[in-house]
Image (cartoon, rainbow, N blue to C red; front, side, top):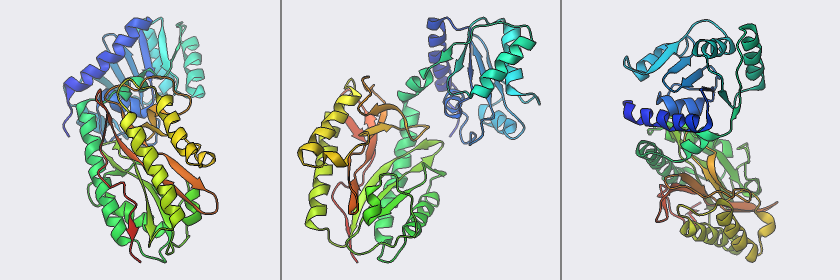
Length: 375
């Protein structure tokens, strides 16, 4: 996709509004998802913390290294407002020189920075005989990122079409005797060969009793007739994520499995109907707890109902017991209640979609009915 410079300029302007309101002369950023969001440079950031941004009211500076510099120039174009620097210097030294040359006196440092970077920056400022206040930037960009623009919504919708197609495929693939790992490999290969450019996270394939562990790791367990199989996975597309969980039955479900599934589905659909912009995160979570507890399974559901999705698979806002903030319009969130019976099975049903003033609009198209895979 081509870079929309009006879009990224608007994001920078939103950050500068915070800076002005707080009295910050500059901000230092190193968190890759925040830099991806602010610059718009797609499919560039990886697992390395290799970049440092220095933002003032009238300047955008970015330090990187030779592994990424050419790609930054390609992605951002010759008319970018970002001044890109690949000098062979340490990030803390570079940032200290920017502070000194700009005469910044209040420089907010993003609280995702490591303590070692912060300590190095303080030491470099002392060596440069430069003094400034360095308050922490506590999640402000996370809050900005929680409200998605149209381009972000479109990328996640597209990622979910790949995820939905993968579900239909994997339901036709699964057979008794396959291992969880074999099913995972087929699922992930399908996504990567049908439009995904990454995986949202390491896929969860958990059969039978393993499904009672919400974040079970796929292994050599072989699926058997009568097993419930929890599949939690997603496709990545241009740095954005999808997230979906479906629980299927290999063969016909037992009466107990059907009963528990119906409770989870009721919790999911009731909570989805209650979501709209302005609802409080913990209130919707409490509704899921109420439904599952009244059905007799409250002791087997302890995780949050949902979370934000975007450049990170888990980001703000959250549906959990501690979030007393309202959910903003155009945030993208999951709804994923579950019940986990140790030694027996687990069930989770997860969609993700956008919160609007009118309600919740899922991107997920896969059905909520319990799928029974013929043996």
